[in-house]
Length: 271
Length: 178
Image 1 (cartoon, each protein chain N blue to C red):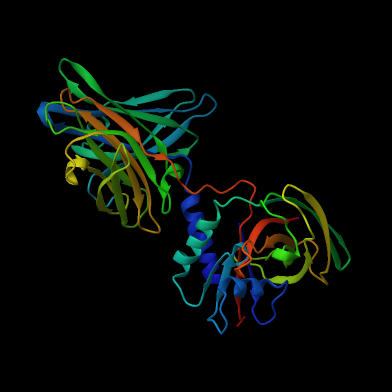
Image 2 (tube, each protein chain N blue to C red):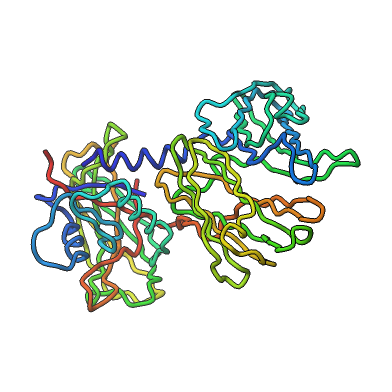
């Protein structure tokens, strides 16, 4: 009996004790897009003034099992900041889309990124922040994405892409429930993510047959008990290609009451 | 969060009765039997342990306490005295009519931290009439024998039966120490 209970404790601790200094940039690109766009990602890493940091950057490629990702290592001096321009090309020689996982192996870091269309007339794009792995959503919690939209006119209005990063080394089943602003359910999109896979589901409202959604939202969850994930939405202006990046927000995650003790009692026959 | 277990053939503190009151049916059941919140949620027999037990915990964690409680303890030889102060926020009067009870379960902190502690002693006292919003003081003295003083721990659980037509109990609040 003890083993069964211990198993639960271990499972909880495993998901809770991932280093706070493992950060994930949930979307990055070095790819051509629609309408002759060229998407690039710049990554920025900074160490605090008191201590230098060493770090590892891992490439979590779209659509792949990233259990053994390509990685590069780096060092940033105390109080210094590093910028990696078009990092997928310059550091990884990679063309395509991905997420990036940055782990501080010594010291502490902060990180952020920008993914943009590198247009000859100027750039435009979206800030993609780093998310601590500890802040990922686990089984039983839900990521809510608001400010979503979908226009039936491909030259006007917006379309919505929703992306995920699987934060665990097992397959993770994802569900996206899509809603209109009045709460009417429009449909559900499912995906099955490989270990540490990054995936983006494009034009999700269209995928459920909802082509005209002036204002909508999505609720993202995993149905895998060991699942843990990050979810985001990229809402793209059909006319200009400009996009807004939105991270999943906690709306109804079970939060323990600060002053309540839960006692799990078991009764068994020793031996 | 506290995981604790008991020998079902030598139960202490009436806690196994809480399980059966939550079960609500006569007859035999399969081991192991488990509960959270004094039987508000229970399971029995061979189940998907990780899934079922995790669900029990996850469902319980966000529930609001129905009492405020502080407990102090004094060990004197083989006697442990626990003094509890309870503020009733349940919205109802706590009394014998709804079975309101204070239960102390005593255990030793396992030397192997991966093991679940076994209840070694227990004591109970009724919560006498305590109106909603009121505060009451209650004491328990429990013989703890030769339990290692350095590893002796306790959890005090206040519970009651919220629905007179239902035998199931629910936890008002619990406190562990020292």
